Image (cartoon, rainbow, N blue to C red; front, side, top):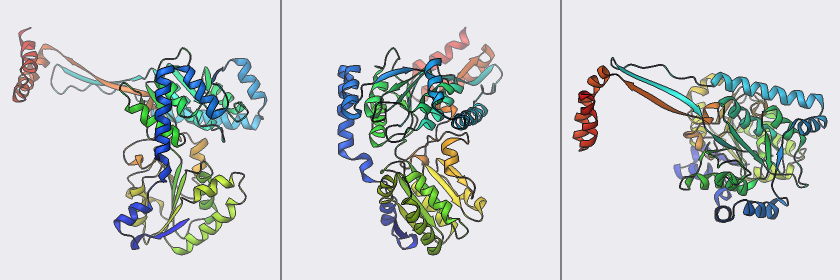
Length: 432
């Protein structure tokens, strides 16, 4: 972990020290994504299939989640595995149901005027679930269940195959528990292109794309939303990030474990430690070095740690400053007075406050979705919620009395802008 003393850094040095890994948007990634999208736009599913075989070794197929398929997958899992998955599904469902917005109140700014916001589910959601080296069935739950609660009629789930072409049985079991009708075995930028152009079976093009992914998937989502008529996206959601603020009361073993829990995701993941003393910084760094050697994914975690940062700061205020400038996907606070820090924070995908609030809980079973903004997008974007799968609009009603109350002002303002047709459309209401 590269170490910096915050007060010794210039503004330019601070910006460089907090930069994300450069290869998240290198020219090779951008060019490859463009080539894939151009090909899929021209040749449709055949192009998706060719890229899938080339990059993953397996052609895309749709796996219908009928009773027999789901039961067979469940039979490969222990009762404890299934109970843990079902607890996660239930907690996510309960949290999202509690956040499901209802139609807003009817507002009457003038007699005869009625204004009300109403919500509708989007029609088609493209759900990307990372797989390959680590089958993230937790992401399936964190996207499919909020979409189910929102009432989205078309939920298209895509996920890469394992090297042998299989899907982990928990992916299928979780899909069944989340109410999905099928899962498409296809991943990467070509899966995002397939969702964008609507070439997977009889499903229409996605109205919005959801889910995290590697640098190629993140770039593909960015590229898709910039196309004319392209889909919306949930947020920039690339390789994982975690920032931990720790003072001398922090448990070094727990902080190190939290940092490594994100570093083991991907070599492009980034972890940041903001320590309030050199002593606790050294304790945590030593613990990280010891724990990483025991991990099955040690090589990935070590590659990620090459981009890790350790900042030493003199106060909670400066710790919050570092965090706000970085805008982490995940933020863990391991200090004596957690409540003194939270009011200082302005940008984080989600916050884990205190010793017992493990980032892992949020990843799997607490209830809020773990699909969160990365690359500093937390300064302006939320993570996935049930609201991410809804659109809203205001229904405006007016009686003749209401029209008479507002038409003169509306017409005058329209004429001030030089828009006479607008003004007449208001005036004419008073003649009916």
